[in-house]
Length: 430
Image (cartoon, rainbow, N blue to C red):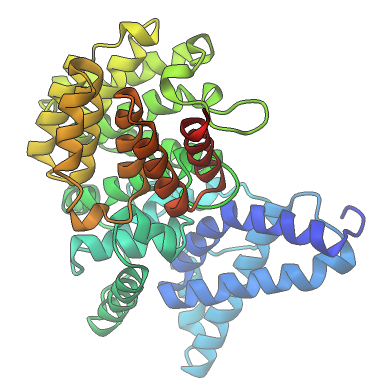
């Protein structure tokens, strides 16, 4: 153990660690106990134990290993109590064997049981497949899995879906109730049955990556740990299902987007927008990995898939040595194709941006104005940011200022809010 920590410093450290580790704890406990609600409750017990012990004993040398070891102890105690209450001590031993509990140790090396009983071999991805059960509607599967295993709050999930927080909260509660009432077995499907859950699993990984790439809340513009976890899951998934074009398309998209991570944030933490980034800081090796994954998706017949189309858009940026070399006409055409595959006002808004770059702000403004009545975009700050940018290009500075101020008022991320307010101030300046 390290030395004792002050309360504020401890809580900051534990909060950051909990964001990264709680999905793994829930995944492992759920695997051992076979119950989602129990896994959540026991994971919270682990958090409480850390809050009680760490201020007194100091931060462990390996905090993540401490949390995991404590989670396993809690799960085994729960299984023991469950067996004793049922008067079935022999079944307790068999259940521990089944769920790979075995000896509890203080190491994070779980290789001995990581590949047990299924074709997946990764605890977190395993539980994503379990939670994405076909007994639930697709949106409920995704919302439940993001809440349990994606490390996202209900508010963050609601923003990802562009829906009220209360709606998403009810959806998660109903999903848990449905799984309990139908007594859905908490088991991993074999490889032959994974395909029926794949769409939901891909969407979960996609939304986790998006939250990491452009954080919807907080003080930081990015949450790199979420990007890294989504990328890791995407790579494992492609290795598991190498003939699935959509999985390759999603991996391509994440690799290409993540290649720009170091150039997206200035030294002071402020955002650096795409056209202003130093492209020498883009990770060329990661770009090549993304292009290779995109070629795989296309070879497998997935060129028109929702993720492959977005990856093709990202590839247009990756292939342009300078911002001025970007093929915006091609990007606009790809967004038009994406709108057919995945109709969405957000896709149309992005298409308008590309049209603005290729055909000018007048053409783009007409497309943006057509989206102003879309219910999903009523409180979507990016709509007003795009409109403000187009108005500024046309010289309508007062109107642009109002749009940027509206975007700032809707921003739930501090860096987004600062960026929009700075643009509003620039438009208001003489």
